[in-house]
Amino acid sequence: MATFVLIHGGGDVGWYWHLVERELRQLGHDTLAPDLPCDDDSAGLGEYADTVVSAIGNRRGVIVAAQSFGGFTAPLVAARVPVEMLVLVAGMIPAPEEAPGDWPANTGFDEVMREQAQRYAGQDLIYHDVPRALAEQARRNARDQSDTPGHAPWPLEAWPPVPTRFVLCTEDRFFPPEFMRRLVADRLGVVPDEIAAGHAVALSRPKELADLFASYCATAG
Image 1 (cartoon, rainbow, N blue to C red):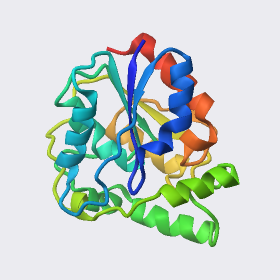
Image 2 (cartoon, helix red, strand yellow; image 1 turned 180 degrees about the vertical axis):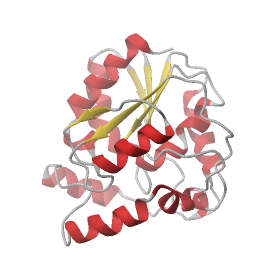
Image 3 (cartoon, helix red, strand yellow; image 1 turned 120 degrees about the vertical axis):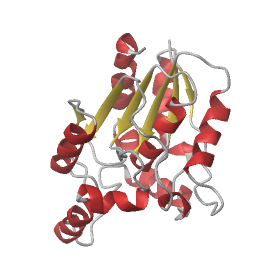
Image 4 (cartoon, rainbow, N blue to C red; image 1 turned 60 degrees about the vertical axis):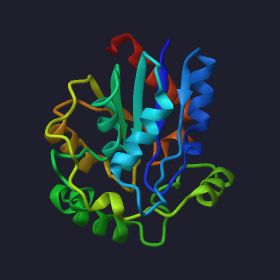
């Protein structure tokens, strides 16, 4: 059995993962979902990684999964502690020494976002397939996302030598699938696993996502 360390996205909290945690624990796995200091203007990606590393402690058999902006933090964790696998879920994929603030222009996401905003004008891009009461709770739990992590270059010179999987959400209105397929191929060189869900897949399809995570245990390490 594994310990799944779950990293939330920008302006969010560890609660985002609570349904997936329940499913994984029912399968016998352990889980951690720390709150990152995303609303602290003195904290950058180094402090985000510190928070996760501290939560892991001396645990072994760790699989790190990261949602969206958490993709900038997860590899930093894998560079510091033993990790069996990295899993990005609708995740941002950093390039060596790339500042998060430069990622939209470097990847073409700035143009994609303009197109998505026009296509879904006035519609929800994040929680559109999440049950309404759960989506409202997620919005209440949201925090401000500091700009501080966006300014400094991503400190790694290469992706950590850890098996890496990518979960692509085919109904994602924020990171549309055609954009993400290209990015995953270009930056990770892997074939993503696809799930029929929007960006907040841990809330809309928690059992399916947990089952996919659990299936990775056989190939981790």
